Image (cartoon, rainbow, N blue to C red; front, side, top):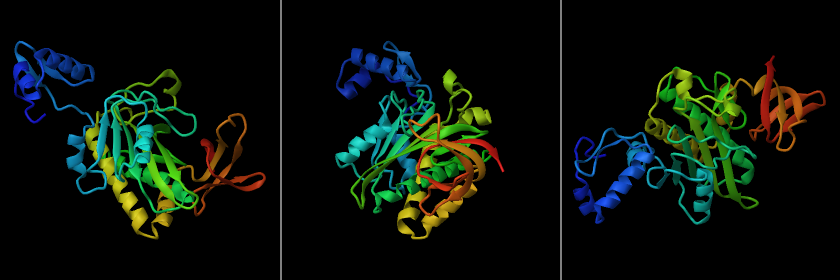
Length: 320
């Protein structure tokens, strides 16, 4: 990447890496299979045609230097789930601010039993480790803050968009979902040991599996423009850093997050919705939303009175 226009012989690369030309050829083929555009062959040498839009630590770290996320960035071409990797690393003592990025997830996870479609090198699949000094009952506020961070990052990169926040952890454009947030934690009764916030953003996808076509979109589909994932990822991490620092350093930030989330959501107040929880797809609650309570839970006015929704999938049936 430092010499992208220079043709370098396979022999010289082999000498620098202390391996054989045959192994260099194999490594070049592996890079090509992962989407890296390398020109040339063993007889003439190799040249990187273009700097790849890969979420490599060497590309991301310089762009997030003054954040908590600059020092421990881990990148995978393929991984089961960045959240799973982050949770395992956190359990083994990985420091706060550790970032886990993947080009492709083989078992991407959403909230509950849902999966997250993770096509190779088209989206951002990112998880970060946090160590907030807060009780586990406050975990929801981090999901809401992450949603605000994603929204701010998207508006900064694509100002023509105004993403809609859907409680508790989705972002939509044109009524279709382009981002999901999954927050997981390990906690004692009174304090969080560590928190992992996972963010999946559909950036440059042009198509989705049949079962998702009516409900999913991407920034590229919404704008007609291909976006730099490196720029989007760096902007996201800077935005997450701002929200997190404000939350843990300022006592009044919590109320501001709840207010800003409600202002950026078309469904938090005055929307007629149905809500289902895991294993309750045929039942659930129906009513009109009446904002968030002081903990960030959704208030729902039903025929039986005001209900507090702790978790669930919100489906909008109309606005009042």
